[in-house]
Length: 316
Image (cartoon, rainbow, N blue to C red; front, side, top):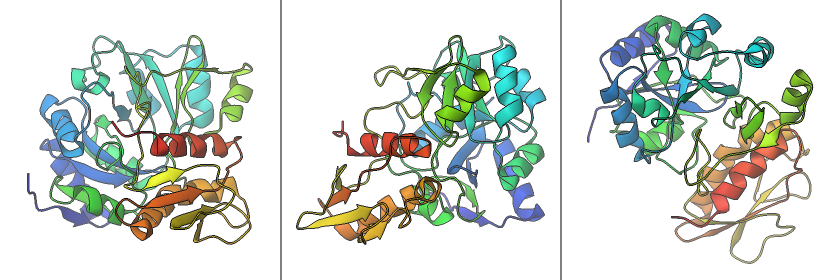
């Protein structure tokens, strides 16, 4: 595969071109508030197959469907009262709900990996919203990077991983949240992946504690593989100091080679995570090592730690 990947500006002409490419069954990377997504028509077997091909993604791993409105979401999935409450509170935004798939949803079976459920969300980023409205359909959109590697939060990251493998990139600048969406299943409420909405906020909305779930062998939602978000270098987590030869990725004081947030702010750390991992990987070089400072395991820290544990896991 050797496509001429177009760089599209975040203006009406760029959005129109991106929508036209998507209608033709092509792949377009676009920004969301979390990370850049690799969009393809969720109704087209060919377009979705091209997503798996471009990412070299395991076929059993389902995809998130991005939608422009709650009305469009209701046409694809069945909402109960809890789902409606969560959607009213957190959409548009970085929350993905795994809900029962409607029989007449019209999605490619590749999107759901043959499961009776579908993962859906309404992105908050204005450029993503504009693209979804211009396309006027559901977009399957995993992160726009080779499968298992560090997720992209800038258009340049997409170019590094997928140039020549996708038709276009809609450049919307850096992503504000920087970690993927929180994924939640219901009946009972179960956290499948920590992300951009803290679990504590969801628990407050529902008035109940969340169970934890997810199966790395048979994922029911994206981001559950044991090894994921991985740089080329080896990661050592919860390191209080760097060892000789390690690139030191810090959080809060003291100074480090790179720092997710010098002031210890978890929102800043989440926004910087994937860009900092890429830079640490570049500095570490082939077969290098990265030491990562401890991150508080609450709020967005749970999502950061989840990504770091998967990045540090043994590679398949």
